[in-house]
Length: 189
Image 1 (cartoon, rainbow, N blue to C red):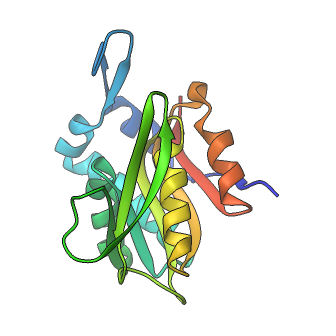
Image 2: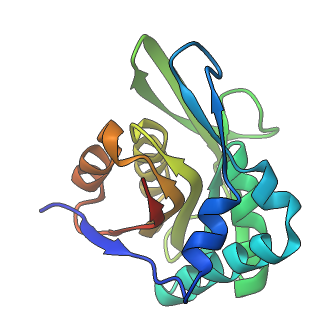
């Protein structure tokens, strides 16, 4: 069974507000890449509040009891959404960044591997976790994070992203790993 494809609802001109607040930066971090810079959106209190409301609504809609934010920009989006929704925030970090006892999940990159980690006591059986990130590109980090959270015994109730880069194929990879769990993108380009 594949994941459930859904689109997170954005009211009226909110999609355009958010999309217009994201800046394209050519050739970053390397030649040929167009980086989607969300810092102008974060600097605009109205746009950031609209985004936080939309993400908090996803937390409520999915019945989450915790929100996992993916390093690093996912932290910036997930923490205020969790606070607004009245649930806890859990950071999923690159290997070696968290203090204390952690568990990790390796995943393949285009050239090599990477690893994400979570505190062993961050979530567990009975927890319903919504994963939030800024951009869905190839899907590797989100996929590894879903596997990692599930290994704790917690239930992943969905993945919600601000921006999906549809041309990179991350949706297909992630839907396969989600096995029926909803995947929401506020904006797809």
